[in-house]
Length: 100
Image 1 (cartoon, rainbow, N blue to C red):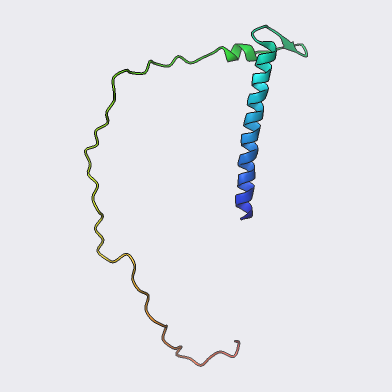
Image 2: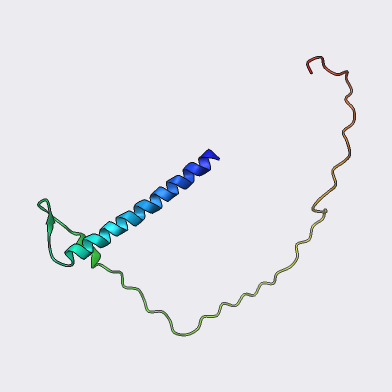
């Protein structure tokens, strides 16, 4: 159980870190807009990176229909899924041990 809680805490931390970094990036973009600026004498390149966008192809306007030619069948089992377990085990063949 401890490993699952640790895993959940790690995922929550990564999600919070992602949201925090995105909020900082949006705040930086809102503060400086498209003006060239520097931080402690180093030119900031975030504005240049923010303008690079990938050109995506247009979405086709015709409807797309996927025809599935397979039929769903019931699986065939050679044995029953659940078998009643046998009764009690046979008695042991040796005398009881003195360790009990």
